[in-house]
Image (spheres, rainbow, N blue to C red):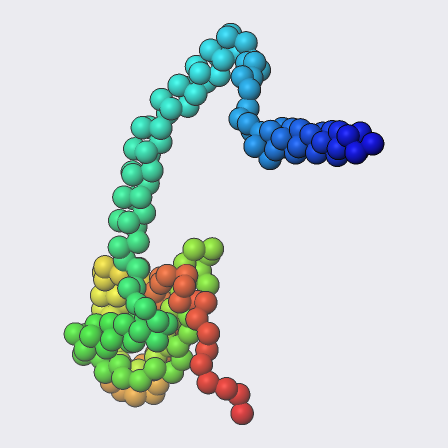
Length: 195
């Protein structure tokens, strides 16, 4: 009887050993590489696809040249934009420009009545400053002509002229000068809190 139980224990060990080897072979150490897959498309389909890709690749140099031309044109058009990092700097540039052009025409333009930056289309912003000054009508005409000849993209967006009973014919002018700026200046947060 001892001999039969020994064979039974040996058989159980032998079966469990074979089971462990099979588990290791087919599950743990299994080769997970993909087998050869049959082609999903035929040769004529692959040739058509290759021809289409060649046609697309042939248009790339033309598109690159067009992009380069458009970038150059955009750069030349944006040359007149006010170059500033903040809206206050853009407004200061406009004020400085008004002061210089006014001084060249004999007009004393000192203070700013109002300054603002607002969106101008989808890609740009408009910085504007409003000033008041007194001058002769000839000086005003010369000032407006000089502003039109500046290399920056400028515009007088508002002008109010008030005459006086002065025998020298001095007029009071309220002028708003606008310039084109980057869109990012319109997105600046206002600092300071409300009281």
